[in-house]
Length: 266
Image 1 (cartoon, rainbow, N blue to C red):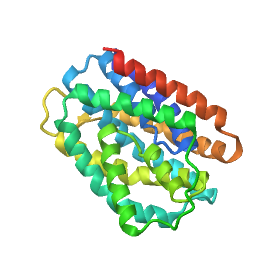
Image 2: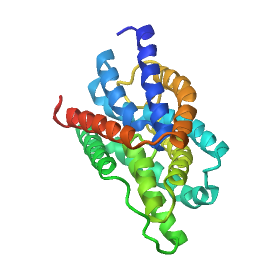
Image 3: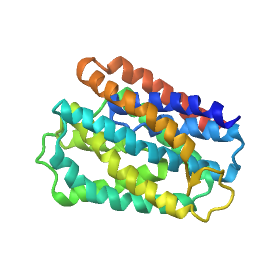
């Protein structure tokens, strides 16, 4: 596939990722990583570099998508900055460690891990989010530990962490819209820390295509980011105006299909 034909395809993936990020606080990686795995293989990238490059590029675009989504939620009055600051330090530390570990995992393991993650997210969305537990707010060290785990898994999988952050915040007693808003904001430090790690770790990596900064493929990053900047605020507004239960179930079905394809496909 030629370099010009790839840009509209990356842009389409970015538009969908932005909408998903704004609506569900998911960061967009659940859409982008499968799309990039497919598009990189179609372009003929070296197979050994595809899984890590897909995760790294997804994380780089999540920084842009999550920032646009978080700003939209902030303007709508649903972003709890105190919760963001409590989770952010652990998230940053965990993201760097997750990127370091992902580079050392065999590519097949990373692909299987992401497929399992998609299937778990789909099941969670069908069941619905847990009800608030009604207990006192978690202590600061609980926020730190949760942030570290969220950051590490997000950096390994190339996601913004919303599917981990939102259930934790709901368990802590947050309303759903506030939880989605905080998850969107936390996608920014997760993505920035993880992207920096992947860029540095990949500087001397062999078999990367031209136009790469470490493991980040810049043409894909540019097209996806431009499209997601337009659609992420649209998704945030939809989250405040429309009932999302039907959309959640349809999205869960798409995640399950993608996860099964990655799990069984070659």
